[in-house]
Image (cartoon, rainbow, N blue to C red; front, side, top):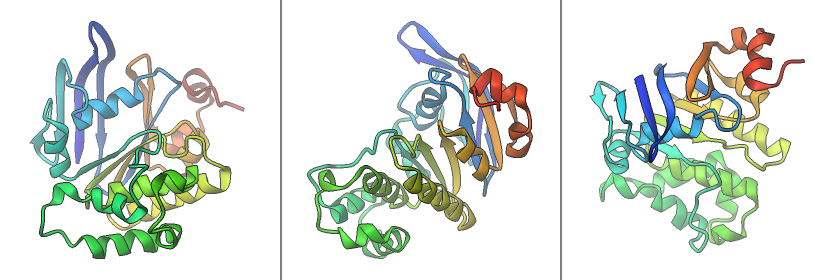
Length: 236
């Protein structure tokens, strides 16, 4: 579904990604893991058009999307849920969800899709008329995921969805990602909670200093203490 081939990217004269290559297969959860500053979020920005690669190629479903604008990539079916609960704080929960469908055009069945998101996150249904700013951190993250799903994506990209959340809410978010995969939505996940990411992922890429240092099944990575210790700092 998604392929990165020798992607270089950065900010100004500072190169952050030094030849990242990876593949995300349809119907899987793939995680990008690594310490802070490893290049994970930069990789996501290079995929979704927020950052233009200086070299290499990004392909999504046989479309070369290298350097395309974010709205062009989104229209192809890529939804990016960015770090930090990116919602519209002054809008209601229902208005926030409706905004998530703005690129789909006037023929979109927005009401039906809002109902599906509310079934997934019942708290959003109960707080449909509440302003986004009034929600807890966990509720805002659920709303951000709901916005992403309103795009009817083929690929859902999530950047640190558990950031700042209580453990119970984190588990609910992870369970939701598994449910989405089982419902046919492919997921690319950046997550600092390594244990949670490994528990739900089909495949894992470990980044360090802007390059892929290791990749394999989640089981293989979890069982390799050298990888966990050297690049993730989580070995027992």
